[in-house]
Amino acid sequence: MSINDIQTVSFFEVLKNAKRILKNPLPFHHENFEKYGDIFRVHLGFGKHVIFTRDAGFAKHMLQKQHRKYHKSELQTKDLAKYIGEGLLTANGEKWLKQRRLIQPAFHKKKLETIIETIKSVVQEELSKIQPNTTIDIYPLMNDLAFKVVAKSLFTYTDTGTTISRLQFITETAQKSLIKEIRQPYKRWWFNLSGKIKSTLKLTQEARDILETIIEERKKSNKTYDDLLDMLLASRYEDGSAMDNEQLIDEILILFTAGHETTSNALTFTFLLLALHPEIQDKVYKEASKNYDDVPLIERISKYPYAKQCVEESMRLYPPAYVSDRVAIDDDQYKDLTLKKGTTILISFYEIHKHKGFWKDPLTFDPSRFDPINDKKEYSDWYFPFGAGPRMCIGNNFAMYEMILAINELVGKYKIETNHKTIEIKPLITLKPQNAFLKFTSR
Image (cartoon, rainbow, N blue to C red; front, top):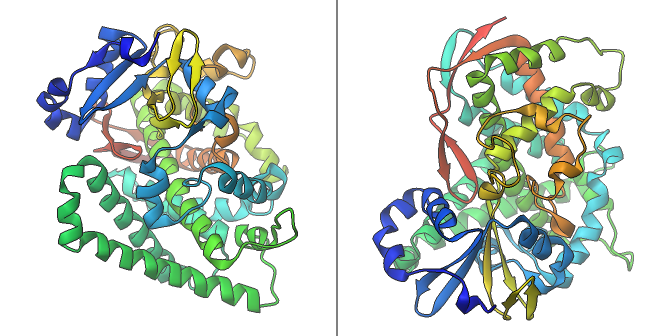
């Protein structure tokens, strides 16, 4: 079967639904998956097509089994790269492989032991800002928390206040600019002509200058901080050489971008779900109340399996990286489907994680799905919270440690409640929560 034989959503249908697709494309995706099955094609005009899939086997085929035949699209390798450089998230091929081999050791569990106390102290400091018996939108707080965890884990820097705030502002401004460019490609001429892109590029250059100063100061000092910057500076390629400053800055900007937004989204969704399910929140509280002060922190985290299950189930229902795309760089075959070189495929993790063929009661928040006593193989083939294959998120352990610490800290101190009955979402580059208002009552 060729791609021309796949059921196709016409360009007319896309135009007819343009307004709601711009606001939230997920209902449009779901309607077509329900109508056409797990694979369909969308006509984008001017002869361009994209294949959409919620076939978990097809996803693993592209991300893992035949990953060498697929690259990330220009959305990341070109559009995102112009703001954050060419590194792990945005590079393809040999460049990506070279960087992955260099950086991966810094995120091994053993290495993370040295920065876990930093993560905990930032979590405690940020969550101490919550005023008891008040209702707040928790997302901005989680966003600040996640950014500062990444920043302070990267560099133990004396002037963290103003420096980190400025880097956070620049990172988030660049993301907002990119979202507008992606969602409104027909306005790119205006973004260029009006100077909006030039202005954002000027800001990102400021961030690069800040990071250059930090790196040079660290190189000139004789101090060792055992943070991520030290680990990255000590990393060596196979020929014994180190990363130059430009490449190091690219990787740091990528860690800021990829490392804070997805975590803040996942934490916010988890707290919203716990507020909506007080009986599950009570189980988290009982677990968090256990005293393991005599156990090293890195080992203590493993003593809270139910908190971890809650995060895993939250990321099933609301995966921050809710879609991913691939472009075939060679002809390929998946089952009876023939894929030509140049074919673009969009994988919907959001749909896979709610597929009735994979999950029992897929719309129900049920952390017991991920109970360690269950066979992980039951869901591993259709669960992609951090992607899959060689390009699986390098910071997955880092993120899980941070989220478990934050959940224990917050649920241990406060009962979380909400007046909302449902969770509102805003799909942008990542899946964001919206109107995440929660009330915190001291326990």
